[in-house]
Image (tube, rainbow, N blue to C red; front, side):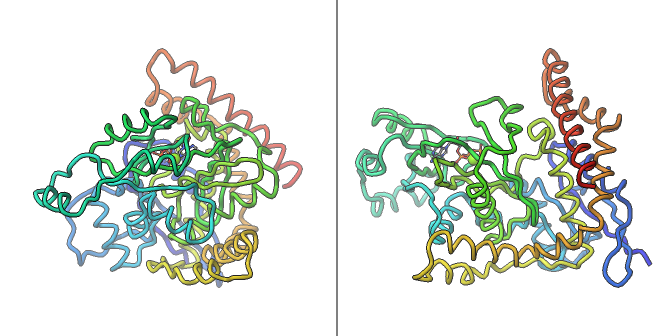
Amino acid sequence: MTTRHLIGLLLGTEDDWPTAFTEILGRLGPVPGPGGSQHAFDTERITIEPFSLRDRPRYQLVIDRLAYWYYHPREWLKKVSLMDGVYLLNSPFTFQSMEKHAAYCAMMRLGLKVPETVLVPYKNPLDNSRYAYTAARYNKSFDLDAIAEKIGYPIFMKPYDGGAWRGVSRINTPAELHAAYDASGEMLMHLQKAVDYDVFARSLSIGAETMVMRFQPDQPMHSRYAVDHSFLSPEVGTEVVTIGRLVNAFFRWEFNSCETLVSGDQVYPIDYANACPDVALTSLHYYFPWAMKALVKWCVFALVTGRRARLDLETDRFFTVADEPGLSYDDKLAVYGDLADAYFDTARYYDFWSGLQPRLDEVVLDWIAGPDFDQLLVRTVRSVYPEHEQDQFIAHLRGLMELWVREETARLCTNP
Ligand SMILES: Nc1ncnc2c1ncn2[C@@H]1O[C@H](COP(=O)(O)OP(=O)(O)OP(=O)(O)O)[C@@H](O)[C@H]1O
Ligand SMILES: [Mg+2]
């Protein structure tokens, strides 16, 4: 008997990864599960329409890329999560309360090296009839220069709930500080000590798996992710992976990216709450096949093993470790790593996939090396870049994907 699982895709403008995901899942075909069961998977793009709160959804799992800004689907997700047990990547119960600020607080509480951060009140009055009275009575005047002096220049000023570099500025002087604060208007801003870093590591996590990539934030979009396999020492690499997994296990992120700044052997996490992490083919390029495999693997694993979403954070399990007097930072990180493994069921995940991995590897290599993927690549570049840049970017992306195909072919030959 084959059980069919329907995966819903709640999408914005993107077409690249949903096409890849559906294609790979289709080519993978049915997968064996516990007790001789067979499992088959279909995907469907979800449309937005009225729903009764008592309707039963047809989906068992939903990958959401939309609800962080679009509230009708957000409320639908809450309904199908609470009422119907639909498994979500990500859950609105995770991302709605997880502005950068909450994540900073949680990670400081757990002893991570979040740079010194201060939240300052709004610069401009809020558009609320109660604001003037409340502010006149309770907003204390404060000395912005003194706060900045105490943190120490250079400083980053950025919105407490930021994303996509909106409102971010690097500040070197009191004049720049005042100009940036004056410009912040109704945005609520953090002042954060700038880390003088050697490398920027961006980790993309999908379920139990994490890929750490060297990120170059000052480069244009297409070359921000550098292909570099050994830019971190093994110890720092493990620490970066563990921090990402800890954040995800703590907040129940299933699909998230985490930014850490590495200076010498010190790792500073600065941004790790991304409801809709970038998985575009044009930005991930070489790492795109990894991301698609991890997404397929996590969805299949969750569905076949009947994984249940947890809506409660059970923060005490982490805080107990944070408060344990005899534990060093490294000791704590090791226990957090174990807690993350327990949450993501890591051992079972890898065990589940060990027999199937060669088939998936073959399917993905075959597809990426073939004409259908090339068509997707061309179509994607045409939809992203202006006409006069398209040929250049098609060639650029093809080159990176050919590199992946060569390396993957060699990997599978030596390690079938
Ligand atoms: N404390 C810091 N020290 C050094 N650089 C920083 C710091 N905070 C932010 N930056 C720089 O500013 C960029 C944007 O900051 P941040 O990631 O917090 O904002 P964002 O709006 O989430 O941006 P994105 O969507 O690109 O992640 C970072 O990628 C980094 O280059
Ligand atoms: Mg960021």
